[in-house]
Structures are given as C-alpha cells and as structure tokens.
Length: 259
Length: 353
Image (cartoon, rainbow over the protein chains, first blue to last red):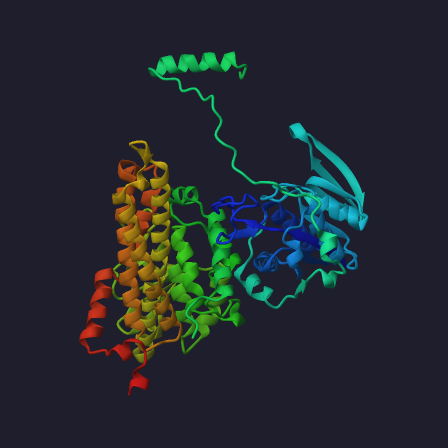
C-alpha cells in the first residue's frame, strides 16, 4: 500500500479582514475565520486521487495552534485516513525551517512514498517549507508541479516555468512534490465524510514527542515589521471633456512607453 | 443545558457554505432562470454528493439519520446562496414524511433515491393553493382532507402559475384521489400533514435568515464603497441606523428559528406555535432586509444587472411559502388566546402540572 503524506497549513480565510497588529509583528488573527491554504487543497486532492485509483493511505499533517485541528478535520472529511496535529508553544514564533523540522520529525519513521505540499502559503508566501522538509528527510523534491504521472515507481511531473513554459522531470520515490494551484479540481468535503472523520485517528504531538526541543525550532529569521505600504504620490488626474481626456490619456500611455 | 450548536454542526455549516459559494454563484442562478425547468439536475446531484439531501434520511436508507437541529444551519446557508433547488420539499419535508409512514414500503422505495439525488419530491399543503417544483418531481405527495396521496408525475396535470420570482416555479395541480393513490389517512394523515406543514415553515424560516444575512452583507458592502459628498454613504447616520435596526431584527429572529428547529426535532407539544413564531419573525426580518437593502442601494438597486433583486425575490417567495407571515401570526394568536400558559409555551406543561 502506498503511503502518502500531505502537509497542510491553516491560513486566514480569503474573505477575512486583515489588520496589522499594533506592534507590526503579524496580522490580528484573534477573531477571524481560517481555512486550509488554497495551494494545499490541491495537494490534498492530488493525494486523494491516488487513493481513489488504488490502495493508498493518505495522512495529513499540520503545524498550528488548537484551531488548526479544524483544517485536519476538513481534510479527513474530504477522504484522508488519519491526521497528525503538531503544536507546541515553542513553535509559535518559529520560521519555515522550524516548521519543516517539526514535520520531518513526524514523518521520518513513517516511510512515506510521496509527500505532497502546496507550492506556498497564502499568508506568508515563503514557499520554503516543502523543499526544506525534503532536504531534512534526504529525499528529492520538485516545486510548481502542474501534472503528475506515476510510472514504475517513478513520478513524472510537469512543472510551471515563467512565460507559460513547462518543464518535464522525473523523480524516484520517495519524493516531495510542491503543487501549484489549478493542477486538479478540488473536491468538497461531504457532510457524511465530516461526521465519519470524527472516528478517524487524529494524533496530537508536541516537540518532546517528536524528539525536538525549543532550541531546535528557534527561528533563524526574524520578522522586523509587517506594514501596509503608504500610498505613493505622483498620480495624475486628467480632467476635462471625455474626448479630450481620452486623447490626453492615449498620449500619456505612449509617452510612458506602455503601449 | 447547552444552548449553542456543536462544533460538528458548525463545521457542517461551513462545508455547505463553501460548497454553495463555489458551485452556486449568482451567475448560475441567473442562467437557470433562462432554462425551461429553472432547475439543474447537475446541481441536484452535487447537493446529494455533499449529503444535504439525505441528512434526515435514516442511515439504513443511505442517509445520515440526523435531525432538524442539524439541518437548520444548512438551510440557512441555502437561503444565503438563494438556492432555488427543491431542497425544502424533498429533503426537509418529503423525507421525514416518508420516513414516518406506518406502512413504510413507499419510504423504502423512495428514501434511498432522494438521498442519492436520483429523485425529487413535491409535497403539498392545505394552505398554499399552488405546488412548488411539481414540474420536476418524481413523486408528488398531496393532501386530500386528512389523507395523503402519492402520485406519479403522469397522474397529474400541471399548469404553471405566474410568480415575481423567476427562481420560483409554482403550479396548479389537477388530480383525482383514489384508493390506489392513498398512502394514509385519519389520525396518521392528520399528524403527518401537520408535521409536514411545520417542517416546511421551519425550513422557509431558516432560509429567510440566510437571505436576510446576505442582504445585510450586500448593503453593508455597498454602503462602504459608494461615496457621496466625498465619504462612504455608510458613514451617514441614516444608513447606519437602518442597517443596525435590521441587524437587531435578524439577531432576534435567529434564536426563535433555532428554538423551532429544536421543537420540531423533539416533537415538542409547542411545536406548531414555535414554528409559526419562527416563520413570522424570520419573515419580518427578511421583508425588512429587502426594504433596507433597496434603500441603501438607491436607484442602482432597481436595475436588472444589480444582483440585489435575486435575493429580494427570494424574500417575497419565502414569505408566502408554507403559510404566509399573516397565517402564522394568526396561529400564534390562536395559541395565546387558547390560554397557553408561559410554562406551556416552553413545553413544560407536565412539570407545571
């Protein structure tokens, strides 16, 4: 049976109002809604499709506070078989490397054949956790995956490059695939699946249980400040009759070399 | 005693909301208006896959065996999305009616099909003269005195009736009761028809809550974007007060609807009164929401292109379905004048005695 790990992150809901904390350390996240990171939903769907095709166990894992359990329950409701919820107060201020270390510690004895992650998270946009996790586990990885095909133990993937170009690559298993959005059509959790998810295992692990300590996940990267850039000056408002405004606007566009 | 929804119930609500936001955008509703049936078999199948249609169906027949307390938040979401598919007649009313028949051959046959999205039920009541969604129904359950009759679509003649809501498809039904179509009657028929009416009214009340919330959200969004005199119109007290009053109206209606869901699920003695209070309270909130949202939007709110009228029309449809607000207020008045004591109104007659 193939064993697949999907790493999920719970991020602020796309419709949540995001305000920066007064100390600029992060956004105010006390009373906002959260959801599974969009990229990670595609990663999960890719894993569930493999499960649909044959025998596979899909395990989902996240590093996050108590509220992150809901993301795991949703993933279980969509069809994942079991979940690992990693949290420890020492992880509250950690960085991508600390998250990757915690995930690697949870994954190292499980011998996963494939690990799926999203390409990046919607909130932090770092795109580092997947590759770091692969490096810590000593397995090959590839990012921006837009197509997967499993052949004779290898994984053939297409990855997205700049300008619409695609790159075809092949990786041996075990490996880690960081998935781009749009690779598939993500299924919805069903109500029955949500209720059945209550009976599926959800293991909670802290750093001690993973053989780590606070020093191991101490952040190497320090966020100095989060802020909304001030509105820039230099906007020019063209006034006058419509035909005159249109004429001036076309002249301006040509002058700036925009067309 | 717990007075809030469980984590599971809230997660089910989020799941249905996410599904409807993804699969039932307003563009899809408008496109369905242009079709002959106004209904989407594809969306119906998706609703079944998500599990909404079989929520009240027993597990043995492919459902989830849950109750109205579990369903009420989900119906609220269907209202928020202005979903016009016959969820109320099939999943909220038809399923429990079939489930509770003493002679259950009909239920054995139809309940799995409804849960799987393979069949639509249309259920009549003694108040509304026209039947919703009769044109897409695979089985029509119609009242005749204290009897319930089950009819195939081929056994009825339908005539479409006008409605100001393109999402609403209502029909006059010509049919003849016979011993072949009779499912039950007498005390069983009266009990099931009364329960069906209460379930239909409760479902409309729940949808009205969702419609109201959506109208508030649309009005607030517009009030923060539309500027007049250099500031958003939402900064004017006249706008703020209207929206605040509407929000109060909605939040006072919510617990009334949730209480009614509890009364239906528990078959409380005060069920009918609770349901009527819920239908009246949620309907008033929704009617007020339609007025206020239109006021906030001003002239643009009258245009076809602006989506406001999609939800306003749902308000007017829901107000009339399964007993109008006036009918339900009269039923509450009857209960009060019949001398229901405060203890009895909370279902404590046995304790009070």
